[in-house]
Image 1 (cartoon, helix red, strand yellow):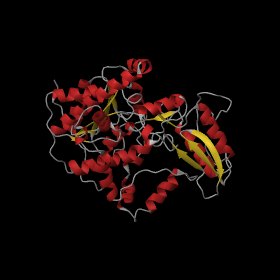
Image 2: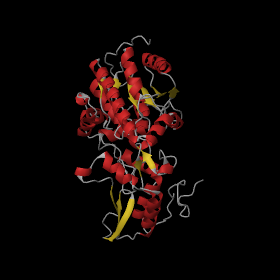
Image 3: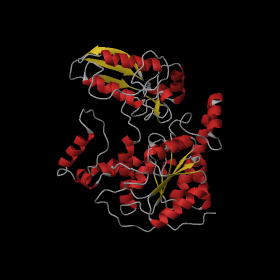
Image 4: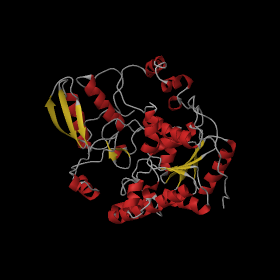
Length: 430
């Protein structure tokens, strides 16, 4: 079993947070921050822990291993009336504040607007002067796909309510990207009773989702996947399939074949054209080689592929698919690369999250607690009289159900309408 912390090792090493009620810091607030940081880099949580990358292609928990060690030392020495300042993954100061002040203040990836561009950021990153923290990597609150599955479930549930009578049963949902965030999509779709095809070029990522029960099947060809999808849709069976492939190739191919899904989105790391997206026509190995050899050519090819990716989504939208952007700036990248209609389909926040929030349907949050999870569950049940959404816990909140097998426990929240709308007929697979 890897040790929680090995200060004698100066480079990559397995990291696991301390467990139990024994302090390794001077107080529980410091201990909470330490455990959150270490949990971000746990091999069962992080996407590439040896590189300090937690998720999102390049989202790091610390700027370097030396910076990680310095953060750990600082947290263990931090008094209850002090505050640690962390700047882009590196500790830069400890200030005497007071017990009610934050124990840690973090600022990541901030550049003066005039220099706020990828070229300048990458120049500074190469010099070890900054890092990309994503949303929850650099803030130390990432807990793997389980942390986003509830929000992803709610997104698809709201889309189902708006477009399909409250359920995705019998519906074909197309998406891409099975990294730390996108990996929640297959499970979220099947929890809404739908059929999910998730395109991912990295076989190891699909396997990880299979191993954790977030995805049901893996397919190596589009024809194989489509046959399974057609059967599952016709039987009203919830099913998720990870297809080894590139979205910039698979999406246009579906358009060419006239196969239009009911709903289309994408969670590739398109925000980062260099480290988060694989250009069409390249294997993982070829992409890694080109990225190291000619970064500018790699970015150029990524951006061109994103245009093709978005154009396919626009074509599907014109033919009746519900299409939305899932917060990865794919539309913005395509627009910058010359696709003038990239913004013709909406983002997921105005389309689905805001309507959901207006109805007082919350999303996940992080907290520290020494109590067992079952106590927290019991407390939720005692609150059931105060909120109709909390009352759903008594019927089995889908994102809290433990799936003993990859296809088990797909109960959908009570109260969601189950009426089906008109389903699209399947065209020929040829």
